[in-house]
Amino acid sequence: MTNLVNLPALLILDVQKGFDDPYWGQRNNPQAEQNISRLLNEWRNRNGTVIYSQHLSLQPKSPLYHRNPQGTEFKDMIQPAEGEKVFPKNVNSAFIGTELQSYLDQQQIKSVVITGLSTQHCVSTTTRMSGNFGYQTYLVTDATAAFETTGAKGKKHSADSIHEAEMAMLNKEFATIITTEEILNQLSQLSQLK
Image (cartoon, rainbow, N blue to C red; front, side):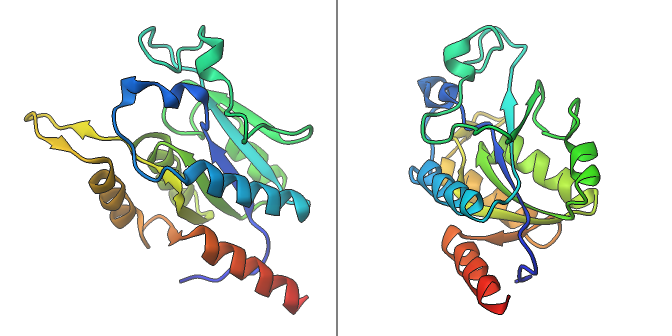
């Protein structure tokens, strides 16, 4: 595992009320939002950079449809504070159609910690692009969550199997897969070295 040498930016992807809609089906990691909140508190305590993406879907049937303010709102425990950047987007990557990459480069941010919803959509796509753009990327497996899905041949895949497969595919090639506890422990050790 690659250890932290400084405090990365914390990316919180699409933690919005629309993901509570039954439309998405069963999900895993019910503790994901709580873990994101723990990381958010740690970053704020350290005056770290916190960045959000907010999905504003162009699909009228989506619970995240841009004209549905209830669905596009951030969840109560993950509300952006003053000074924390929010990048609205219409597609699965927080890098496409936004100023995220420019912002990271202007701020000279070289590493990011990715959390949010959902694993097979924005989390996976943003993680892949982050790795391809050359950022040191950490993906917090228990601060993300997947939803069940049905494949092209009608086979249903559980949320856990989707999540596990995505983490396996992203591991090492695009990101360092890490848990909330592991990253908090590394930050604690980092503080002791300074």
